[in-house]
Image 1 (cartoon, rainbow, N blue to C red):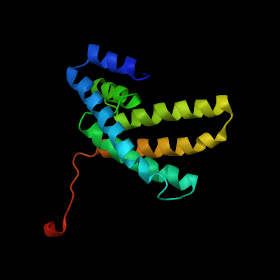
Image 2 (cartoon, rainbow, N blue to C red):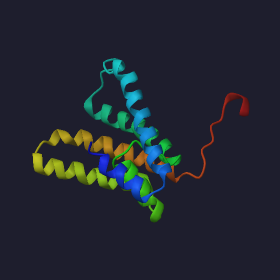
Image 3 (cartoon, rainbow, N blue to C red):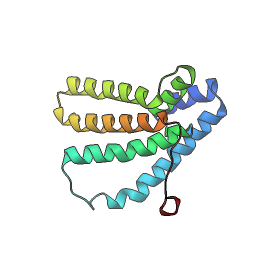
Length: 145
């Protein structure tokens, strides 16, 4: 429900394309989270390592979605719209915005376990920025070499 104003803004002021891609991204992300939920206890890593590795995985998915002008809503969708009008990488917009939110939450709540969330946000934003800034991505297979 928090994303509703962002979706409505996108629907009213942007093309229907951004709105539909945002809904599509949200649905696919939700389905994938539910499908992968049974694997949550498969690995037992430290919170530091889990934060960084999880951020890399999420950042890869978000970066791929942003490259195709799609998102799963929220700050990602807002970053995509902002990057349409200003020459700023959407991954960088996400990184700055999410970092501000987490740091503000740490100051207000005095709960320094939020440092794990900060590590995740930094990992997500960095990977998404890298993927959206590349001109093209080539994947070489064994037969190509």
